[in-house]
Image (cartoon, rainbow, N blue to C red; front, side, top):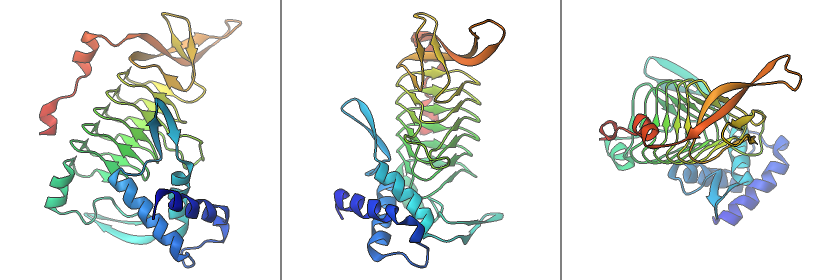
Length: 274
């Protein structure tokens, strides 16, 4: 089914979603959702992508992910040492040695990715979690206990450090996914949510919290950004005083632009991807 036809089936079904149950799924919808999940796994479909320099969210793909939950019932899923009860199968549940080698990524126990996620070549998944609809570009490191939420878009050669949380968009329903562009470094325990875009070559220090309403203060220019970290920024946690000076509120501060010294400290270790 062509993309336009898939979108039409999904959009129509989403309008009558309250009438759809796992036991009553129209054949055309079941087929369309299966193709969407396959496309998300392969990276041929994405919830959002950069087109002519601007990020575009394909809302119909996000609707398809939501309908996948609506059209599937919970089932027992057996795993090593545990059992799950969920609607979404594991991404690598039937992978063989040959399929892992073909994909070119490394998955360290007990890392988990749900189906409907794209994992690019040379990605390393340390014990971490990647949710349905997410896209993780080639050469990215998803470090220990990092979480990549539903529909998040992660670029190439990104490092998500220990305990990083990149927030999803399905609950509560957000208009746009959180996006980390190519060649970014996200420091340990940082959280980036609510559709924030971190532009390419940026470095986010440890413990930075970014949401749509967080002030991102550029100390060199005095400019304040919301929902977007400009390309090549080095960002640290900070605070700004209130108008009357009686209190301060947390913010993020752009302290400088990425330079050779910063790159040396945050560069990717190719040995981990061999």
